[in-house]
Image (cartoon, helix red, strand yellow):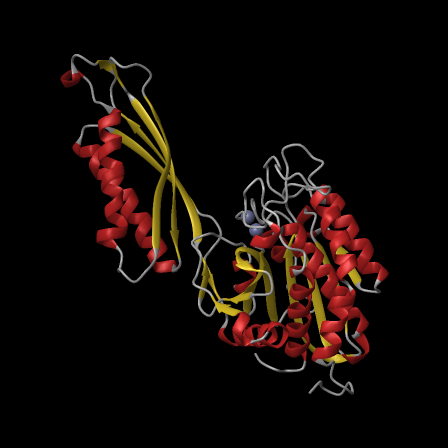
Length: 405
Ligand SMILES: [Zn+2]
Ligand SMILES: [Zn+2]
């Protein structure tokens, strides 16, 4: 039961509130979809968000570390804990190929990861929760975050105090899922997302005439051995029950059929779900590349660049959001998901407070919504929008009333 604020908000009220917002949600989503903005440039989006939050009487803070972030603070009628709900706002540098009235009006930019729908669902949740303000015991923070696709908006927001004043006690994020049908909700019981680290390798040999390989050092032959040997990081060095990806994504070297390549450059990614395995995999890549280059008379430079950390659901936040989703869509439409080897800067919030993310199914084959995220024809069934709103609202209210965590 809610602490000292009279009657609890019923499931029926929540679902009605979300349902009544449907028209508004579709308008918002299509407007954001038509006007995508890349990471750290989400000024139009942020402006609409801030204006709407203010119209609801929600306190608005901006300027976090010079970013476009908007944080709303809804204060309930009585004191209690603070939950943060997070949506990312950025689009991708992709040319949209959908032929729909709300297709992107900005050439080369598109909401191909569904962040337009995340902003929309969080605006919907803020609207519904503001309507229940008199019965809230505690605070709800709304994190509208820039640049999830990179360079990352969560870290500068946290550094600028987004998780403080009032201190956030729990955090929930959401993402649409193109492989899950509309009406279904995915929750993640354990590890959620990987650390998407990157590496670059420069192999320097000695060029020369291809007729005299003995007089040069063929950087392409070295690169071939390096790529082959890197496969053993996953297969021979890491504990077999720990997921690891090592991918060489680019390779450039040589310029003529009869000339030894003096130099090859390669870039790739290492993805892990565990901090120790992350260190171990990076060390193994470095050692193998250097050892092979030395054995074959080449020199090598290896640079690593670390991406977002991996993260796992907090068990009690997972249970809370799972129950909220069960309440909204029924137990048979809940999926407990495996982790993804993709990255998510939601991880940084989880370093500061217990957190979890849920996935909102947006696929509908009958309506032609089957393309994956980041596809130039990605689109989603907008019937997903009120469902996401209802799960956010139910989860937030349950957190504030001490339902879990
Ligand atoms: Zn994405
Ligand atoms: Zn995304």
